Length: 256
Image (tube, rainbow, N blue to C red):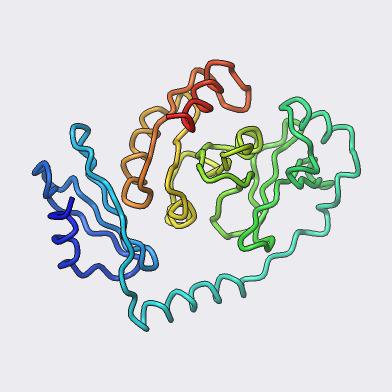
């Protein structure tokens, strides 16, 4: 590991960039990545037989720090307001029925209601501010899911230290308890905004729906350049249905 630290210390990686190279441990061709996320270096080898991974802090230049603050400021100034037709749910029967079907309290998740399109609306926040929202149709309206803003950020629920990456808000609401934070990508693609958010976690569990296993494996490879410990949860059903076997596997992660 000291040898790897010495190698990495000699490589200049600008903030926000990732470098791919041959693994200094196993010799894998282009299987080793190093990412600089605001002074936090994370490295990992993608080769299954190589367990090299780690991280440390590095000095940021004044330009890097200034760029980081500028990006945050620009994001904060991109104001978002819910459309006027999205209102408090006020215990609307259809909203309660939907939430209770999946076993979560609407007020715990902060949902509201789209009276125009009959949708239960999940809030998306960043640094304590509402920056976006996504709505799920309660009837047969298409598309089933609709995003109201342009933040590109995931919906999250929970206060833990292990990110559980799922496809939809309902699954995120179901798994966002205890040590877990449910992170809904609103699809099966991993965007730069998702990677930036997930980089704050030391452990991320990829738990996409069972029919998305190839994308799950690909996503795990992509994310290993940003998160120290990335795991794949092979599901028998969508997590929102709380299959006992799947929930046991998930809960077992924090005990390993």
